Image (cartoon, rainbow, N blue to C red):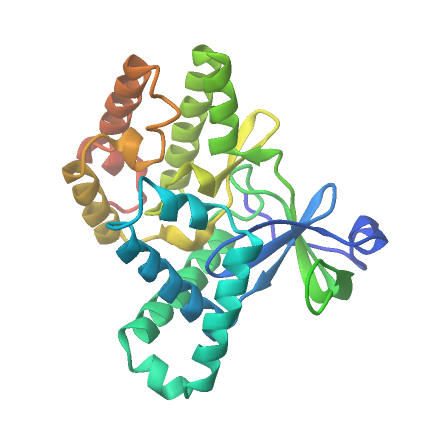
Amino acid sequence: MRTPLQALDQAPEELTRSRLKRIGEGVGKVVYASENWVVKRERGASEIIALILIWRLMRRLEQWLPGRFTSRWTAHPSAPLRALRMAVQAVVAVVPRAVWFSTHWGRVWQKFVHRDVRGEYLAVKHLSGTSLVPETVTFPPTLVKVPGWPGWLVVTEATERVEETLYVRLKKLAAQGNWAETERWLDRLLELRRAAWRRGVFSVDAHLKNFGVIHSRVVLLDAGGLTDRWEDMERYLESVSKNGPVSKQFGLEEVLADAPELAERFDARWRELTSPESLRDLWPGARR
């Protein structure tokens, strides 16, 4: 049975003990952490549009720059990238918001925000209080210290910190040649997906960086790709089936480069789990 978010009288003490560490960022948020808890700063519209513009610019530059220079540069946020984002954001801020919203970039932003808000709503509705997501606690507005400007952030909730992303865990195991343990974690990922499907939600943003590790379980970190619509799932699976091995689409190409047999088993297992018959058995109210 699902339980509501746990409400505390005050924030966990470690959040206010010292300055939090910046551990990651995405298009929509920046993530800070203490030893056991994570808090997030939601980006504003101008920040998100600036990042979308930078990402599109990098994609265009890929045809002229060597190898995967641009993807490596944007995959790991750095001081130069943040400086570029701030410069572009300054330009975006000068242009009236109504103008941006009438452009393609503004429509992309609106679509992103809608998907993110809807995904968070579905996660709370269907997954809160389960082992499929990290624990989240709420508390009165609390000031915490963070790196960078302005050096502080007011938060009202915190999420259990994962040990690492599933992608990082699998890369470590692959580097050790521990393929048996690698396969066990991939099986846990698929079991997580099945458990979510039973609850009527499906993630269409399934890269392994969106999943984390807590002890012996895999948890969903980014709810932005969640949907509860059968039609969305059908369209996603149809697209996946046309774009080559699912292991590559999930970000496993580098991880399983030295274990092609394991990649083939994972792909076969995915096809089995996502067959129309299997999904109809799991999905609540699916068309029979």
